[in-house]
Image 1 (cartoon, rainbow, N blue to C red):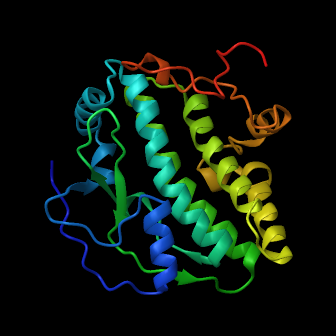
Image 2: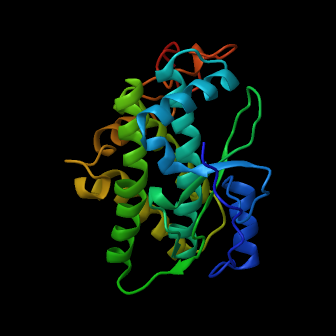
Length: 256
């Protein structure tokens, strides 16, 4: 596996408080040690590389099934991408370059509690420019159509993991993030912006934002909200790992 070079770029466009928040809450590293096993995310877009990675990751999380490992890896991947990029978008009116070609995955080498972190080749933070709705549209298109959707499509193709399951893996983090931020003591205008950004992502964004024919969250987000965000429509398959159980929101649990 070809490892990337140590990220030593100047941290441009991020305040100290923003960097601290992002590093503490988003499993993001603005710089990382040469000893870390880091590699470019686009490395996984080749089938041979992806399947070899999934096999090794499966050993760490106690999974012998490619689709199970794919689901749990994707949960970790979207957590990293979503927490950092949506915090920048909705709280700070800033953006990262979130194209998949810019993403670096950092394998923390942890057994069973394997939680990779990530960084970016270009870690510059760019402030909002021009009309916010147009700017938001471009940020969301980059995040999904040029990153998350690409990784999802390759995972689904190579491992036969359900696309619906993978998309819901992303949805639960989006809903969780915006619920958490809405519960914090933010000014009313920011709370309104948070609500508008959430609604845009899960209901108003169009297919091109996701490199698809339609918004993959449209139907599932409404069903998820009808269940008061307590029950998924699909199972993430965590219960199929060694020692794994059904999550609290798993549809396989008995009816509430």
